[in-house]
Image 1 (tube, one colour):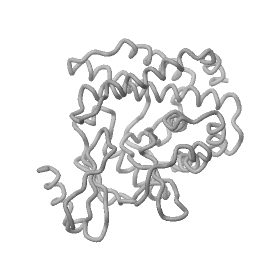
Image 2 (cartoon, rainbow, N blue to C red):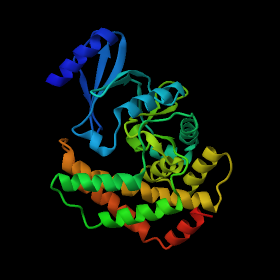
Image 3 (cartoon, rainbow, N blue to C red):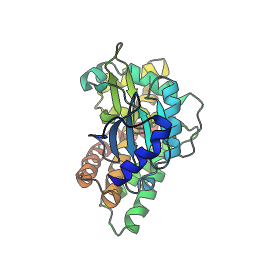
Amino acid sequence: MADLSAIIARLEPRLGAAAAPPVPLDGGITNRNYRVRFGERDCVLRLPGQDTALLGISREAERVANQAAAALGIAPAVAAGDEECLVTEFLAGGPVDADALRRAPQQVAVALRRFHDCGLQLPTRFWVPELLEDYAVIVRERGGSLPDYYAQARELAERIAAAMPLSDPVPGHNDLLPSNLLRLNAAPHPIVLVDWEYAGMGHRLFDLGNLAVNNEFDEAAERLMLEAYFGEPPGPRRLAQLALMRIMSDAREAAWGVVQGSISELEFDFDEYASDHFARLARAAGDPRLEGWLVAATA
């Protein structure tokens, strides 16, 4: 708690005196999060986990992206931030209902389109094939070994990248797990996006594939999402691209689990996390439609 106390003391002249001891918040598997009341304002204080820069995280990009998203009304406001911590407004709400999200993904799709098109230039790049290469180097440097299926993930990511090159990068969230979607209690109960630490310049379809696979969208939900995002019903090319980006998302999640197993001090089964995502990726790689998706994505 020593570093936490020191950070709170450093923030108090700017944000106001802490009214009570910090309250730990559950749910994070990278950082430590606390609810702190500074003056009259309830906040969330996040302390980065060990060596998180090795995961491709830029704390400057996180802060800038969160600020831009807050200005668009799709993220909590940023109260303070630097390399040691990020302080955002505490918003009363709860997790998004998974079934409701699948029935009506349009609000999140529109929010992503607004962020992608806001013109923001972030100081870091997010591209899965590059991350997989970087993560492999880190694991080996830490004395670890890569699972046998890591090579399959890299090969598949490269094939998808060849069909869908990163030619026009946009700012993205890149981590749309269910826990990073918050439905506010206040009417009209909007959804906001939290945890912007993987924000970077990447492929606009990655956020959509990441959202779809992590929230178990079926084809109907995918069509609703794509139509809301692009303003027209999706054709075969966009459906194929989304299917491929779902695979790209699992390649990233699996590789992330492998490298976190080498660097993180948090109590979490990263090996199981990686294995689960590799298993889902392997099922997708064995889908007889894969070659057709790769062809259709380039049409």
